[in-house]
Image (tube, rainbow, N blue to C red; front, top):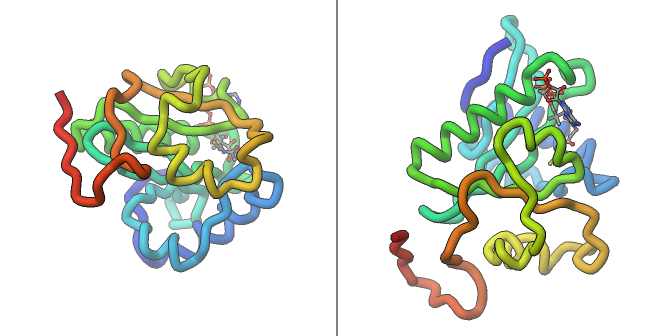
Length: 172
Ligand SMILES: CC(C)(COP(=O)(O)OP(=O)(O)OC[C@H]1O[C@@H](n2cnc3c(N)ncnc32)[C@H](O)[C@@H]1OP(=O)(O)O)[C@@H](O)C(=O)NCCC(=O)NCCS
């Protein structure tokens, strides 16, 4: 098995796998066009013969925060180490960008504890995530996901009404 950055040719596999688990809220539903536009966020796992095994994405908010999204393995690939390798690759990618905080929302915190994530009790401590996804989510007031972060909770945010569109944030 190998792990590599996604190419546009992976977009159909990513789209089908991610949306196969969006119906029950395990993963956020994603449009095909959005997958294509953001395909460079994705890392994929594949077999030695090139069979698609799964994917995960690193969304960059800014120098202060990134988010692991859409991490999922095909049913036959689960439990063989691919998910962990994709997650490690995404964490390394964040580190290469100099980002010290990586967040995610999940129903399976036990998986992410193994990779250094810890629970954030108050989701309001991640205002960029709230503004980007939660405000438009049908589960806003009955969210059953746990917020987690690896590294420090960011001291700044860059999305939302209080921020100017052109604002640059300096991370101290
Ligand atoms: C979560 C998921 C990506 C993990 O991928 P995977 O390839 O099965 O995981 P791995 O085989 O790399 O497991 C790595 C370690 O995590 C553990 N683990 C795997 N899934 C776990 C889970 N749901 N809860 C707790 N631990 C888990 C494994 O036992 C393994 O531990 P070990 O190193 O001590 O042996 C995969 O199960 C999946 O696609 N789940 C459905 C989609 C989903 O829920 N994604 C998360 C959305 S936030």
